[in-house]
Amino acid sequence: MLCFDTMNRNSQPFFPGAHTRAPPSYEVLREEHEVSVRGGPQSSMQERTTVINIQAETAVPDHIVWSLFNTLFFNTCCLGFVAFAYSVKSRDRKMAGDVIGAQTYGSTAKCLNIWALVLGLLITIGTIIAVIVIVVTSVNHPPGGY
Image (cartoon, rainbow, N blue to C red; front, side):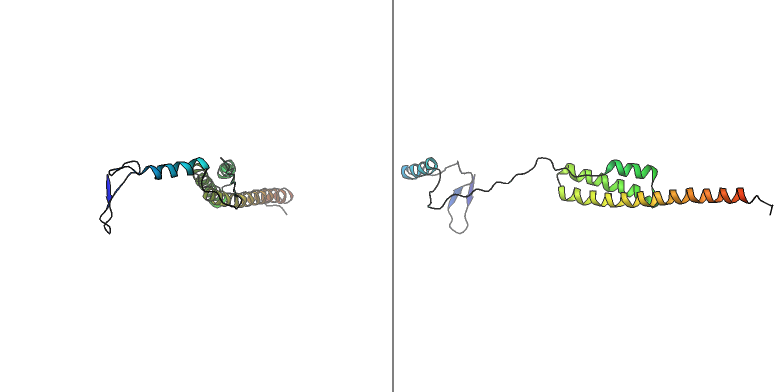
C-alpha cells in the first residue's frame, strides 16, 4: 500500500517493512545496528528512571449490602432504594475500570445509607416511644372513667 504526499508528489511505503524502492545502503543499516547494540545514544548525564506502581485491583467500597439492608428495613423516603441504585452504579463503574466514577457513586451511596439509617432509626424509636406513651396513658386513664 502506498501513501502519496501531495506536496512532494513522492510515494512512501505505508508499512515500514514494505519497500517499493531499492533497499537502504549498507552504511545506514550498519549505523542502525551499532545504535541498537550500544543501547542508544550515550550522554555524559546520568540516566534517570521513574517507576510507577499501578495496583491491579483498587478496593473501592460500593456499600451494596448496606444499601440492600436499608432498602428492605429502613427505606425512609426511598433513601434506601436510591442508595441501592447508586451502589449498583458504583459496582458497574468498578467492573468497567473507572475507579474515580466508582468512588463517586460509592461515596454518594454511603451518604444516602447514613441518612436512611439515621432517619429510619429515629422513626422507629419515635414510634416505639409513641406506642409506650399511648399504652401508659390508656392504662392510667381508662376510657369513660374519671
